[in-house]
Length: 202
Image 1 (spheres, rainbow, N blue to C red):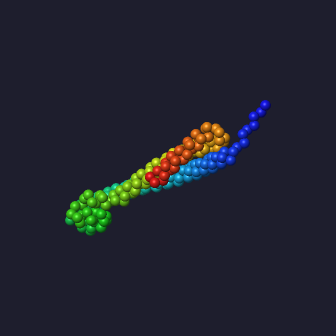
Image 2 (cartoon, rainbow, N blue to C red):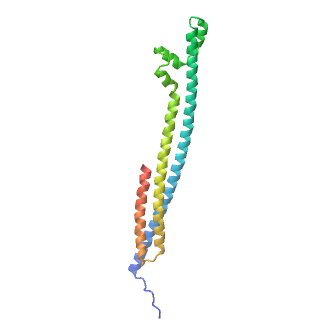
Image 3 (cartoon, rainbow, N blue to C red):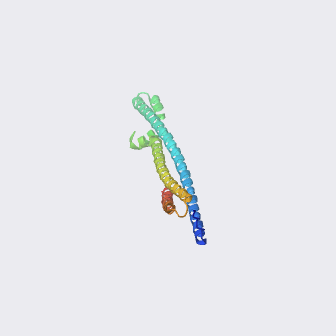
């Protein structure tokens, strides 16, 4: 003897339709959130790599500028010593040495003291600026890495929610787990959306 399945009532069919629409919304929303999080994580990773490369290049430029400044300072000391030694002995040679003073050294002498603090600031200005720019780029790269991690967390949350929603859609309306997984998916959609917005506006 077999038992026939009950014929679904009109209210039951309506309830089944609502469940299917709700699960369809969850699957769609979580899929979009997963894809958006993945895309934004990729963009953050790309931007971080670009900033890190720019920081490394600028830091290398800073080192080059520092070495070059040291060479110019040594040249200034050589010219200054030559002018000091030759002045009163061979003024022509002394004038030659003086004509090779850098603008920074001449400005320092005009201020009343050769090789004052301002002289060194002027000589190392380009190197210091490049150094500051390099670490600004590296700090920005680290910030983008933090954004990438936040987007990846949002993607993980959305992926788990999507798995719950997909599994719930395979269960029939009478199965208790269908409701449980649907509620979990809805909660994870909310948490994932908040995490995505935190990463976006951080």
